[in-house]
Image (cartoon, rainbow, N blue to C red; front, side, top):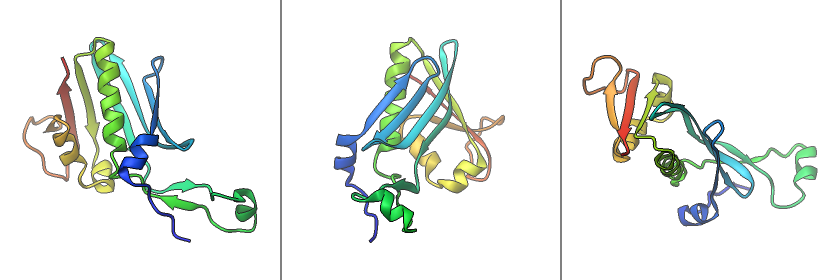
Length: 154
């Protein structure tokens, strides 16, 4: 049986994002399964985005007799939750919570590994109104170098 992805509308209607202000941790859950997360650190009026991840191959329990099916060796179904708006929903929640806390600037880094794993990542940050610059040069980047992302939110 092939694991199908939920529609974007269905997923976003059922998506729940929890937030812990103590450690700036955000978790995106769908049907009690963590499908995305973000971890940030506050530095004065700047929020540093340390990690923002959406699951590319998330194990999903079988809808019936899950324990039995796993016990007899049937592998878990896997679903890709990228491209359904989970990352955008997480980012919007980060911005909303940062604004409430009086934070005026978001900042983060994108590594070569991030770009290799998600080739459209820099375009996504640009669409979300981030400034994308090559690390240390202030020049427009190419996809082979680590880059810095930033956004003013106030």
